[in-house]
Image (cartoon, rainbow over all chains, first blue to last red; front, side, top):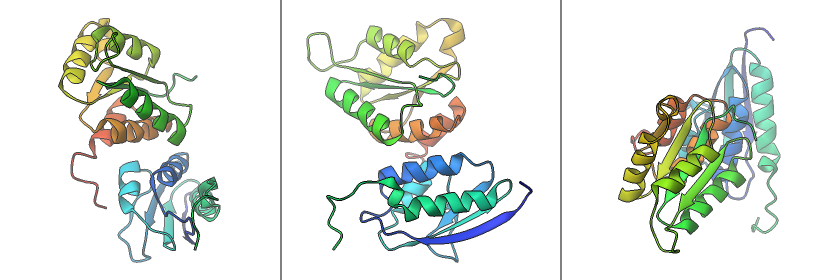
Length: 101
Length: 135
């Protein structure tokens, strides 16, 4: 994969939003890529390091937030794709017991 | 279990707190981080012991080192004593994190799971207290 940059946005529908467990999953996935990856709740930023568990958790992004990912470097396109898909899959969490109104 | 990631040791005065914090790390982060916990005195009361802390460090040992999360006073001083009693080559690879025990353990383990160094694991756990959590 050549040096590149990529941008992707995804609507987060997880009922609880970006709480602790999803934050850990997102950060771990981000860390599995070598490129620089940032995430933001608005296209205009502020952008934070998606590999920082402390910063990702501090986002406290609620349900129906559109998360924006941008990456730069090796595997950037794959990284934003994988992260967007994790969000779209509700972080692979079973939350049948959570009211989805 | 792999030992290629920094180990995490949780030291609480309460056996239940230590076990619960470890359970959170296991469920939230996963099995790839060496993890051990200890707490309580042999009689079932509150307390910490140098001996059990040393055993926990040995259990969670990784060549990359071990990060220790503690709760209150004695947990920290006994952890310091336990580290001092380790062989010299291990002693320098064990650090006590200045972080809240539960949150710090989860943050440290998340960082460790990515193969980060002991210094990075420690600074991620301590970032919580550093006041830099606002993005």
